[in-house]
Image (cartoon, rainbow, N blue to C red):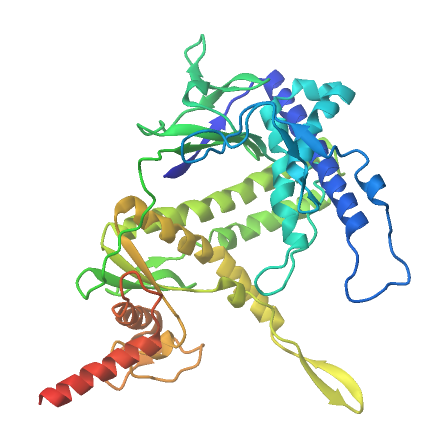
Length: 476
């Protein structure tokens, strides 16, 4: 099991300057290595279905001029066979070309020696931190060159500006790096930085080992994210079959954050909406200040802290809400919402008038306010949190297809209504708020979930209801 704990750092002025310098060195190295990948990719790719009039042609000798074809292993490899022996040993000669392609990470890691030789500033940087800079390019670049299952490619990885490279990762920390200094303060020992005091408000659980540490600057100072791991604890989610007694449905909304099947609800805190007026006032003042002046920097800091408050509150509230909900029930049945579809732009409406194309009103202004309210509610954060909280508490969660749930009642009979209708009146005599009603068919659908199977849907619930009615008819 892996957990991530966040701690505030309290570096001295000299340590803060050192960390900032290391961050800038890593940013420059990241941009250089990414540019090197772009250059190699642009030089070697050619279209397969046509012969272009102009093509960028480079000889193989020029492409691989600065890339050695082989390398000598300097230590035993980490990967081992079934007997525990390393697959590659120290002194082995290994090829840098695999299937006609350059092993980018290996070549760039080996080239870091030349970087330190040519640019002496990089000798002040911890070698493990510098090596970690190469790996993000290895994970992001294949998204451009390799299509996904739908045949689509991602955009090009971007070069990072000064304000967009904000992480400094030490991939090999240990519990021994958390020590006490002479004034008896708890510190984290970072390579080439020293013992940095930290606010150790949460101790490392017994048996867990510190694996990595990522230093990130935020509006109120520096923070470090420690990844801790305990391999003896498996990452499993309890498979509990939902029943009428041990489960409850949840309807996610905007007017109310969640509506429970028992009639209770949790109000939507609306962190962004409540801070919007103050944020707009500060932004107006900032626009009247001279950019880069001291008053401008003060207002910029206040705006950053206000944005930070909204972001932290939007992460904290879903987490606390999920833990409270699992204290009341063993199995929660939740809608499997696709928020990307919810927040799409309204489709364009056009018409032809007198031979000219005319764009008709399509309600995008109202849709923008709707999208803002959805993102303010942070329902995506809640659905993410509720997926891993059951694994820690020994509980379970079932996701159901939300299609058609708001038009059904507890009896699952369809009661057609518009999305603007906020009241549900059913043929069976039930009359209540639409959000409160939606939690009941959600639970009803979740009861048809088979442990270990795929997510259930309204179609399965209706088939189950028809089968039960048929069985009763046969018994009579």
